[in-house]
Image (cartoon, rainbow, N blue to C red; front, side, top):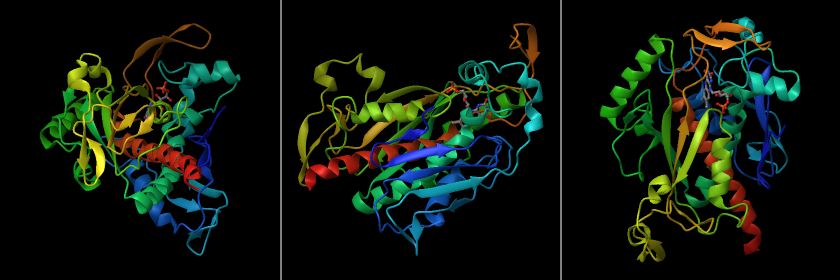
Length: 360
Ligand SMILES: Cc1cc2nc3c(=O)[nH]c(=O)nc-3n(C[C@H](O)[C@H](O)[C@H](O)COP(=O)(O)O)c2cc1C
């Protein structure tokens, strides 16, 4: 099993959904970065369950402790241990699912692959695993902001069939995005999305959605052609988030319908540097950042665990009807916002360190 991401800014996550704790080890963080739990907690609080009617009612404060790698408020350059205790475990909720694998969850594949699996709540396949990523990514975000002014902002751009209107991606703030519980800055679309998620939840069903993410103030030159192109690593990072089904950068799939004369991003001088007049490339050309905002979308499926009765089969192949118990998200996208932002930061931070040796 690979639980590690990054080559120089290396993050390994640990922990199961209903075990004692979850967290991460960050190896390769530069020394002398001012760091405390207060720098990490805000993104964990935005990710935590139980924050609104749009999310699972599992009640976890998700308070992070820094176990190592920081002394007197500064990083030592040694591995940083991060831990969040699990408190509101209810393994009993998952008893009937021990014989019936949840359709479209990871119960069947984990059991087949390992011949064993965590008894409850999806173990490592649960979104609780993402706590370690978010905590580690919050450190990367801080360093990127202090060094380059990098700002990474994700928001909900679709839920089911409801789309937010196209908005200027740059300049949106986290305060604007968090101003409603679905995390969509288009207030009209947000109200419809909230209504939809509420109706779906009341029917014991679930619904998918799409996030848009923009990373601004990005140094030119990040990305390592050919196999570690920036967009390839971003896609890998995003598609490692549970429930993701799609990634597109810049013009994405719609670019395939355009003519070159429309799709090309012509150059011009911008604030004393060579920039582009349009950004169909999404800030990446040849696998390398070009200094324009990096813009991409991530598609999330409807969560698999639903209370509605589903006809399926037990592990032994006998017909069964599953009405899943437990506390589940009717739609994951509002909670996925800080996960997408911090995973972006992890990818960018690793590339910053990889590029730094060229400038020695
Ligand atoms: C923030 C977040 C919350 C999630 N909450 C749930 C949930 O409550 N119930 C569920 O079945 N899946 C949930 N998921 C998705 C599952 O973890 C995921 O679908 C499962 O591990 C199977 O993996 P796959 O969908 O990537 O194939 C959540 C995902 C994210 C990102």
